[in-house]
Length: 338
Image (tube, rainbow, N blue to C red):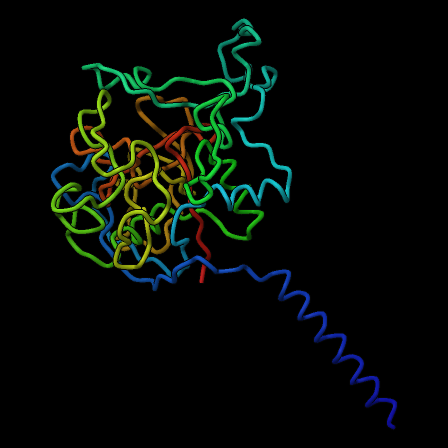
């Protein structure tokens, strides 16, 4: 047999084996994801409840991508933790040496009890002041994704609930492990609109409780009483409500979801192009309410939203929080570029 031919066959065999290994290594599973064909849409303010940071509306072109059919669940997040040993932000003790450079010089070190791992937990309360979030949010020591209400709570039998108490940093770590990424704010709004034009919500213009419950939200007077008419006081198992026209669940309500973008209150007015393609958000963050605090965008609203309070489940509604923060009503989902 010709030696050159044998050498060629051996080379081809090794090459194919190598390609197969690389393909397996680089392959990202799209199980549980929905393909969204790219297109152009009008992003931003489009209804009578639009806030200042949702103006002006502007034309955006988004390339095709894949998106999780639902929020990342406790079961999925547990697999990530088990395989990597990752420790979430809410589980880490605060390092005073790391944070003291961000506070005024001479600030004394807080008591060690104030540096313990903690996360924000909601509690119903009677109040007329809806501007002071501390009325209904408490920083609970050792509240985290495994103990969502603090010590003594757990997530047994809640594998299909969205993971919460995850920071932006935690979500990015999960994405790195899974080979995916967080959606941009533009991708999120494109997905929640699901091809509809001139609509207030992902399902249309009907109120969230009109005819049937459209998403998991607060039923009653926030933050004092929840009538629980939609059967869920807190978060609901993913997929408990009808999907949108793209077949995606819970883009509105249930839990707020991290986006990759920095938050800037004037970002939309800073866009010069008549049509912008695949925007990644501003380079810096700015929130006039807390100008020295950098924040990331969260979208979609949560089980704490209703029409009388934040209506965060509106298509164009924007919210923001610091990338190291975590709470009972914040989770995430992932996307993959096509």
